[in-house]
Image (cartoon, rainbow, N blue to C red; front, side):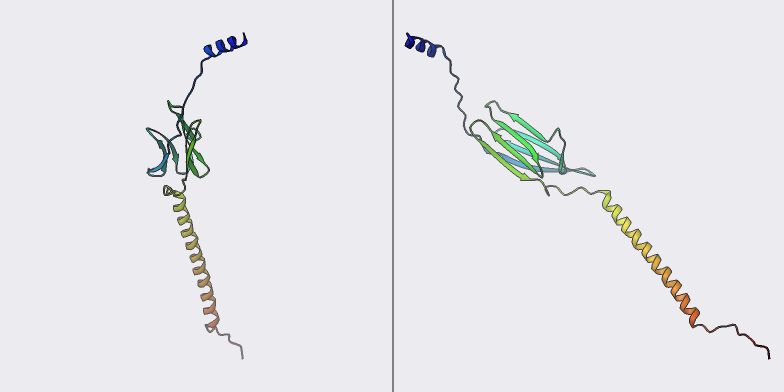
Length: 160
């Protein structure tokens, strides 16, 4: 009787079998675009026929943009996220995982800021002020030297 129940149990039990291949490699690429005051870095993670991008303003990504993921029909996931000064591109499923990590420093030239121009102007002002002080001091010293070396023009007469 137990064998019949076991046979009936196996007949009505439905199994789901999913076969997955290892994931394909990823390709992580970077592009820079610039406007008048900033540089934008776009990191793109590609595999097979899918891609996902992460956009950052120079080295800083928005919190909303800091991590993105895409799940494919086959059940694999494609992730891209910023980790410190790097971008990580990851393709994974239940069988395997492939990852690419690239440093994003020096991918784009740093944006030019007004801070550098202000620093140059401040240095110029300091140099000019120092020169004025030196000229003033030299003028005072030269006048004092002339007074000491010049014979006195007034003569005192003593009564006889």
